[in-house]
Length: 585
Image (cartoon, rainbow, N blue to C red):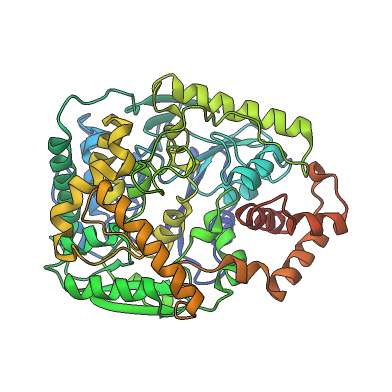
């Protein structure tokens, strides 16, 4: 949990509480409110131990998320109902010695309110893993919040809707930074110290880190060693303080790396599936090899449709709810009871070139490695007959503006970092937005050292898993001959994969024809099953009737057909349905 709303203007008691609690459909968190001549502030309870708000005669200090301290130990992690971590940040900041890019690692936001001078300072993390939004109310007072919809409600800025952002989300999966679904609300910059000065409704912002394209000259093996040590150090900072931990596990390689680094600690390893399948069987073998207690939890085949409303509100408009994979299981598996739950999010994005556009089929056919598609441009107009042509042109201009901003400090890899910085440009980040509000989630691949290494290594090291494989190889040795859930062997480098992967694909194709490999074999829900269900049809009908989408220029009957047409792929159809939900609610 843990979100805040700050307003220069005094807000009536309990109004902030209501808006923050509206994020949740159940288990609404306690919200602590502060009011004074400087304005109003509301903060929901932080699940991460040690990060309760801190107040003295002059300041109120709020920490969102659970940053790992690199400047001292993290013994406050075991202290419930404590402000020790918040106080430590405040004391270092007061001395002027705080180095935001070095001292705090992982997702965080720090808000400092000076009750005497009325100055407000808001610090975002390296990638804005936790985004912060700003707006000016109708009376021009300044407001900030970590949840875009809660901010829109408290500031009465729910209208006008930014229709370009809605189209952007439907077609591109994200909303281009710094825009949101609301015309008068914008996301503030990552890796930045923002100050709101006395008598001003504007932010004075100073970047403390920019992911400049400054390529390292060290050998790849040296960087791999640094990377492995960085991930290990981040994890050890946490587990040195507690033995009450859990992890997510899968048939993939990221969870094997985590499993290896956690193998000397008792823990439960969770996987969520439609039913026990090939992914689950591989995950169970990984758990057994690395000494984890394997925990399988199955879900209804329509689970991802059932959670649309609650998770859309939880992650906020403009974020894909479908990445809130743990929702529901956070209660049934009692994830909130653990001091730390480890995941492998953003390994693909930061270290394996998942956001680099490749030449089609490269990396899939034997002996043909991944090849970067140099002709691709994120600023190109995406044509779709469902949407107004002028809107598509204007949207392309918006995306081109962001691309040019990234190109100002990353010439070779701008297209990749277009989808990375800030992290709201990455479609998978809502996974963190959900998890951090539900339990004490820790993502080692989001640590500051990993982010900085990702920013300075050549793209060719990310392609074909070169850097990751060298980093992970010693940790993957115990599972050398255990195939990935997709059929290849993570221990080995690309040339070996290029031979084995096609052979395994042929084998599995034969198994399907013989009927011995039926059903959903992967980790996530089967969207073909979901979108062909009667519940999908009735949900679309309900949301279409309640929403008027001006940019589609379609009546209800045509809009219903459009959402189920070949003019949208499955992901876009789900995005459209989610947008209709927000329009209705």
